[in-house]
Length: 409
Image (cartoon, rainbow, N blue to C red; front, side, top):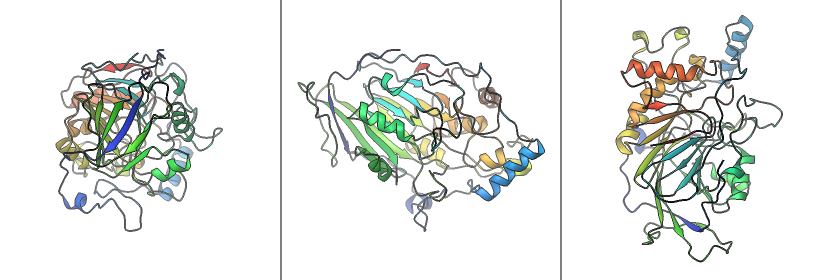
């Protein structure tokens, strides 16, 4: 894999309010910030969300195991192919966005401007608070943090352990001292406790300009800094300046790292625009809530056609789209009546793809840990069926790739 440094030239990062703010929805839920609960916690404000409670989930899962209804996915190799990633050797500008899947929801994205962004990195064997307990990888990590040559920004969707890893983010901050973390509201305190100060937290529909200015003659100085400044302060005429816009956007999920902190921090999807290309990162999201009566049936059949869908994705497409590339979750969805509020299945994913106005998409949130009951190779198969349902091409539009593979768009 390529480990050639792309950052011989140091850059100073500036976060500023956009000179021209994007429009946002004007509906009552958005204007009133209805996702900010009265109890100081966050919630999903749409009819498409019916919160799955622990006292409903646990007895149901135990019953499924006792009655033999629960499927135990077979992780015997071969499953998802893993290859060594090849990263670009320099920041030289081009006209394509390059995305490399590093497993589960983690993507490393190289923008045409030279910007390098890492999404939801977890470089651990288990996604758990314990190194000896919890879901264990059934596919190998394609690389380590040390193998990634340049990381300008890390974008985090929410605090669940399969998306946010303490050992991973602290190693990234150590190896890349200029890196800046972007997180949903309420997560900055956790990063500060980890010793990470270069962190910006945003609410849904908030956006910032993220500007990297080259520090000529500063290659031997250890003063690569990240600062937060007011609107208009980040202007630069240097042709090597890297300019991007980062937006925190809604999704339907939840967040917690313990038993009592559910909803204490926000969850989000994100958009990043730089070098004439735009990307939407879905993170982890549901689309609608299906009832237990749908078990064993097509939950998109006529009898379930009136179930509410999350309106946020059409808003995202309308106010921030279209996007050149979407990174959209397709796994961890069975049983549906338990998982559907917070995890999209492939049919949901295609609906989200259409709603958000993505021109192309790659599937995430599968192929790494067994989190739910579907067979590990089922998501790509159902994705093709979902595309065919809408008379869309089964390949070349919304694809999956090998772990470690890069796609250019």
